[in-house]
Length: 200
Ligand code: SME
Image (cartoon, rainbow, N blue to C red; front, side, top):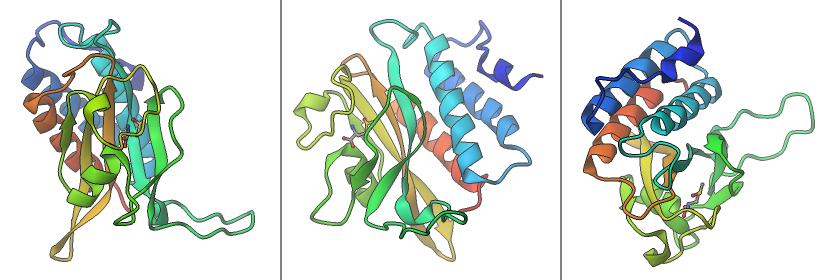
């Protein structure tokens, strides 16, 4: 099957649970035999964004559309420059990773006391945050003035008996209350799959 067909949404998919199970299955197939996180997160962002655009019952390309889907990753996990002059990789910032949507802010400070925004809060808490109205969230970073609601899910890696937070998966919606508990459950499973399918 051509890779692009993985965003095709069969007609029987009506509920959010069916939707997220389907996306999870498609993503499993896409990430097979590939462990580079840049590549895996790129296909994950594209699959999530394109599948949500096709899910017209809840999102689609209407005024309820998801206008951004992507990742912010801890700076020190980025590949080191090997050809040009090496620059230090920051461990106190999340850097913009693979995404779909309009251009977004390049980095997010996460050093305790200097953190700002929803992504930093989800990263530091290690918990998914549902924000029904971004304007009511103190410190929200507005990358796109059209965004009304947001969900941010941490990327959690179980490693040598402890849990590391590698970054976050962030989705923005043009409508208030765009996301709910079913989206949270679905995204958390997707985040786990992406983390465990990649080398960090
Ligand atoms: N709104 C986020 C910043 C990232 S953009 O939404 C893509 C925040 O407050 O952390």
